Length: 290
Image 1 (cartoon, helix red, strand yellow):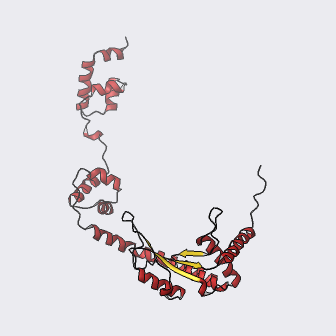
Image 2 (tube, helix red, strand yellow):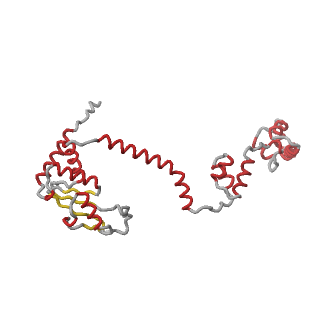
Image 3 (spheres, helix red, strand yellow):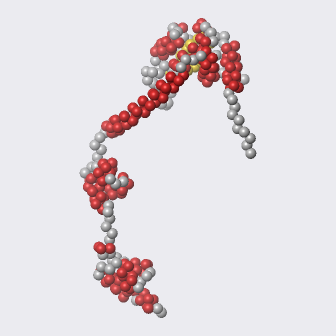
């Protein structure tokens, strides 16, 4: 049996020596070297319940910050306010003060929202100015439209928003529906270009039953320069109380339907022109893939 094994066998004696050395102020390493105990598990058992001497404790640089953070929290400060004053992270602050009661809200939700809005206002104004600037520059780039450009634009506009013929439901008639006054103006200008007389144009309004029907008819009459009394019967859409409609303000005027009488030939011209536009678009060559 080696001397070290012999010492381990007399555990109680060894523990008395370790405790005595600990109480003299020795560190774990000093006790280990003094007693030649190099097994950490045994050393832990020997020093169990014996606190380390003060000189071996590492000072924590954040102890003062933690104490100050707790003081500020008890004064009713928020995490943001504590962070500004102490310069530490919110995660650290949360760990230090999470057992303390939350401060009472000093502002209403509306007041907080208003403060946040004012803080964002300069940024929002700048973004809006940038947005308007881009739109204005793009509008100026368009310039005047030639008759050919207006014709092609009208064909594309109709093919996007107008009714179309289907093999299972023949509808060779021109009917255009939209809620955008600009779209309606461009479409009527296109009809003028094609020589579609006003007498062949029929209008009627489609609108939610909760909307202002008379106001909508007056609105669209001004857009197309027509007397609302000549409009067809307004179509009312039933209101579903389960839906969350956004178009409920005074700017809501529903949609205007424009139907052209005797328009089968015009419809065929539109469809043919659209096919010509599609055929004229160059198809990019992808090359051979191996």
